[in-house]
Image 1 (cartoon, rainbow, N blue to C red):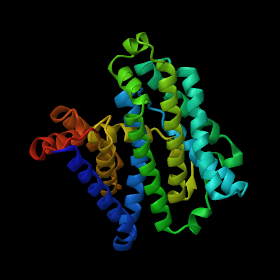
Image 2 (cartoon, rainbow, N blue to C red):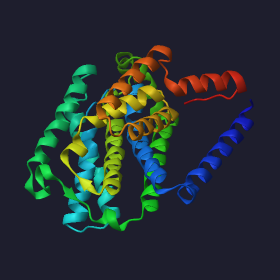
Image 3 (cartoon, rainbow, N blue to C red):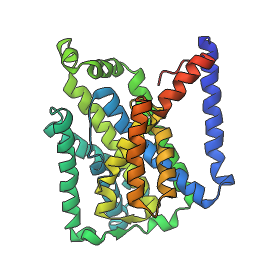
Image 4 (cartoon, rainbow, N blue to C red):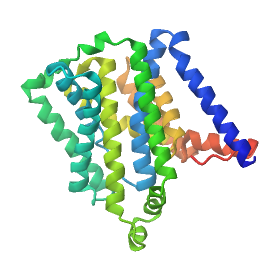
Length: 315
C-alpha cells in the first residue's frame, strides 16, 4: 500500500471512529453509555502505564497514587471550597504530576522490581494519609454533589476527550525527537546513556506527563462514581487492572490498551457479583495470552492485517 493510500486509510478510520463515538450516547442506553465511560477511563490510565512499561522499562505498580490524588483534589476543591469544576479538574491533573515529580526525584533511578515496590509504598502511604484525614471524611469517604448535576452524556464526552488526549500524548511521544531517546532507552538504557541520552530526565518527563493524565483520570472517575474513598482511589486493584489491560491488549502499543480496556470492562460487568472468580479469570486469561501471543491481542490482529491487507501498522 502506498504512502498516500495509507494516509487515506488512516484518515477514513479516524473519521469513522469519531462519528461512531460522537453519536454513541444517542443510540445506546444508559448502561452501555456508563460502560463506555469506564472503558475510556481505563484506556486513559492504561495508555500511560503501557507506554512507560513497554518503551521505557518503567514498571509502576503504584499508578493508583495519581488516581487517588486526582480524585481527592477534585473533591476538596470543588465540593469543599466550591471552586469551578474545570479548574478543579486541571488542578487534579497537576496534583498527579506533582506526586509523579516527587516519585521521580526520589525513586526513578531505581530499576525493575525495586522501582515497582517503591511506587506501591508511595500509593499505600497516601492511602493511609487520607484514611486518617477527617477533613475529607477519613475512612468513610465523601460524596461529590456536582456529579448529580452533570448529565451522563457530558461525562461520556469528557471521558472520551481524556482518552483521546492520552492516545494523542503517546502518539506525540512516538513522533517527536524525544521518541528516539525513548526507543534507545527501551533497547538498552546503559547504552543510551553512553551515547549522550539523559535517561533520567527523559524518564522523569514521561513519568510526570503520565502522572498528569492519570490524575485527570481520577477526576473523571470521581464524576462517574460521585464518591471519594481511600480504597476506591488508592486501591491496588487499579495497578492490577492496568497490568492486565496492557498485557492482554498489547504492551507498548496504542491500540493494545483500547482492546484490553474493552475486554476488562466486559469481564468486570459480567462477573460483577463474583469478584474472586473475576480475578481468577483475569489471571488465567493473562497466562493464556502470554503463552499463545506474548505481543497481546492487538499484536495478533496487526500481524494478520499486515500480512493479509498489506497495511503497515506502526503502533
